[in-house]
Image (cartoon, rainbow, N blue to C red; front, side, top):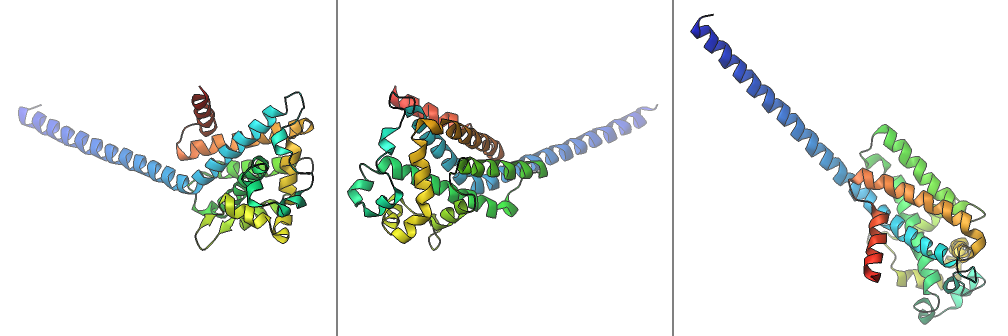
Length: 246
């Protein structure tokens, strides 16, 4: 092979390698950008649900832990016998004696709102077919967790969730607004089974139901953490609480 031909071959090879490297690098960059965009989009729709899963897991875990006491109950939750009594309470009660029970009810109502919203937002999520199917199954598992043992009926969960939205402002009711709504018997009655659910959860004989629900919440939370490329939400919350108490 002449020197000129060898030089030409080397030049062509060099150009080919350079072009191939640029194309490969460009493809990898596009894939990285698409992955980031997918995670950002999923985070927009899924992060509110992640937050309320963590809040409910933390609150229910605390209630479950207190049923291990000598009394076998989480006594701070047992402040009424009948949900109808809630409508007779004043603001001081909601901000004092009744806060443990009603704030737990509020957090779960917010969770129902976010569960309903994610179902509505399914078309906008960037999930694989397998992940899409798994998300639907995990959402159902959480809803069934609240239904077990005559808990909150399946069809009323999204109804409660819908009532939590202030649509004009695109936000959920604040705790204060929620308490004020509960003072109206005609509005409160739709949440009675949820209030009763939390009263029942404060008793030791509901431990199995609570444990199954906690598992369902944790499984959905872990799945969503992966979808948005985030850390372990429930573990991080637990660690933060431990650090605060140290």
